[in-house]
Image (cartoon, rainbow, N blue to C red):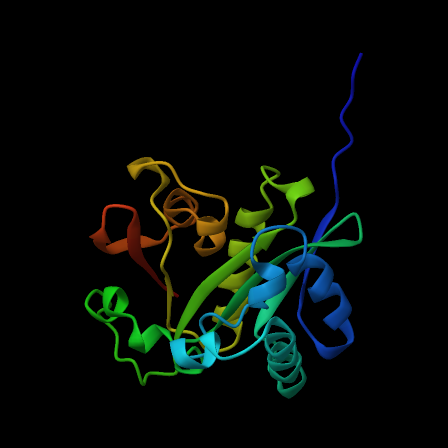
Length: 197
């Protein structure tokens, strides 16, 4: 009889002592290595004018300054996934993205509105439920740190073919299954979702 061993998943905040773990989680495929989860924290000009090494430095400074801007998933003690979560006011690109500003019902200067904006799961762990575990942990983390509303800007995979790189935003079905409501569907493949906590 074949028995599959179940992996142990733990999720911890991205603190300065875990920066090397963050790098391992971010560099397992997709754009994580070059982006360094700075897409939402930098303006378009800042992002385009920075190198991957500079973005890595920005991320390290963000983590060092605290509070932790992300969570890291460990599968059998190996850093295997990442989710960026924090107040929208600390993610500059959100208030500059027309798809979001035209859809969100919340004020963009309200620090109690948080956003879950980026997922990375190493290739060898995709399809394991790690994204959902990260989403659930991010909701708990946001709630414990003063969030009133949590938004997400996921991809609707039912609307057409989606590349793995586009899924850094998460899948709409994952957010809906976790209790998020669809606020708007500004594009066929994109949604704005929210959860009041």
